[in-house]
Image (cartoon, rainbow, N blue to C red; front, side, top):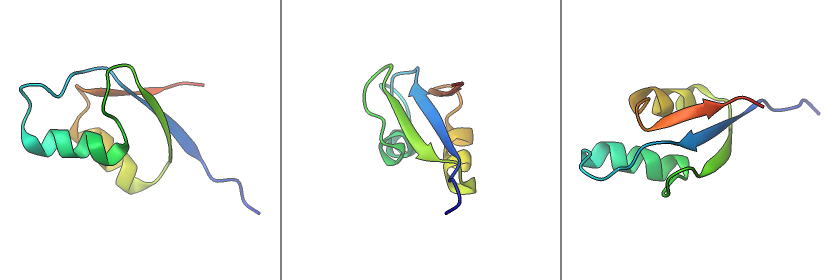
Length: 62
């Protein structure tokens, strides 16, 4: 079985005073609190979501 690549995404910015679309992207990634870290599969869809809110999230290196 092939090992799926994953990335860790950490929320570093608050969704307060941000457009509704950016809030929905954070929720879609599974983020809702500051400094929360989630592990997601490294897919183009996840990378695209991260690219839309680079000021609110960062990719954590292992």
